[in-house]
Length: 177
Image (cartoon, rainbow, N blue to C red):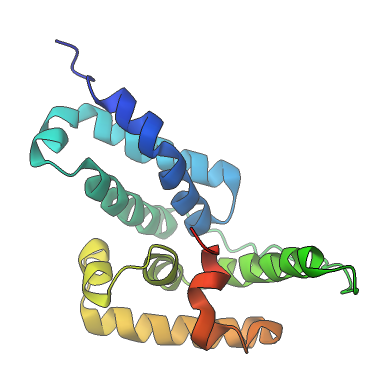
């Protein structure tokens, strides 16, 4: 019996969704690939155990968030990307959406690790406060305060997005899934 039986299928089926979450957390494709690879490598060594527990997806997502927070503690990167944004024109919704996405990505990179993780879980993953707290290993109160502070900081960092943040945080962070 192959010790990785089922693992390859899990990675094939759920890998793209996990990669999307990793990208939102890290803000870059290469960092997202590294993060996901680290988590999947750890999962592979414990696959039989994880599979017996019955919910490898939940395990993977929890591991992804915790590894991201752990990485950021160890690998502090104080550089803040400062790309010049193109001027807004009346070229249509597609250009506006691209500019908005760039603004959001820049603002997300400037949030604390915990704030970014909370926003991704709450608004992209559509998790409850209790689920978010459980996944991050913190209290519901911490999730509430981190969400509040993160949205407040996003409004400060990208005032152009201010009218979108309160009602449409899911749309901003990931669009419709």
